[in-house]
Length: 161
Image: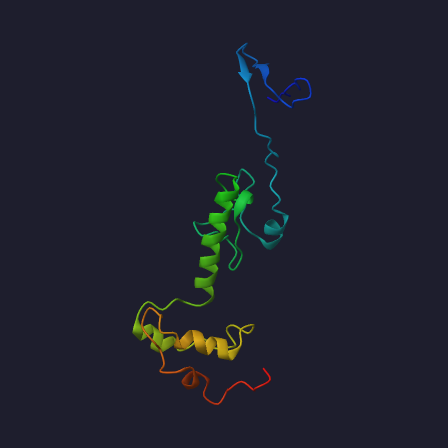
């Protein structure tokens, strides 16, 4: 049921009274506008993602859809359609994407096995910046190398980089 608040002398909505079909009358002093619930899931459907009966995209707790590598968060997913909720879902999905792209090492043995991140895995980041990140003393397993030069080896950046 929808209703409109009446304007009181140009002061904006001040309240209203509505009656339900059963004769119950209620007085309102304010309200919240809402857009409705037609979800824009055309992209998800075209990619083959599973859609729930209510029209939302089916996702796991981290925003993963039924299609590998496709994530969804916010109003197109089940749950509360609120900005803070969508922000939290986005953060969880971002972490899941990060973890799905490259496994996070949990032990020093895994660190040794995986080796340093290469520029091929993160092409937009300079080799020197990656070397600094790899040699960083604050790494959970301690420093992986003694110095940045050890990581860079023969790949020292040119002075004009």
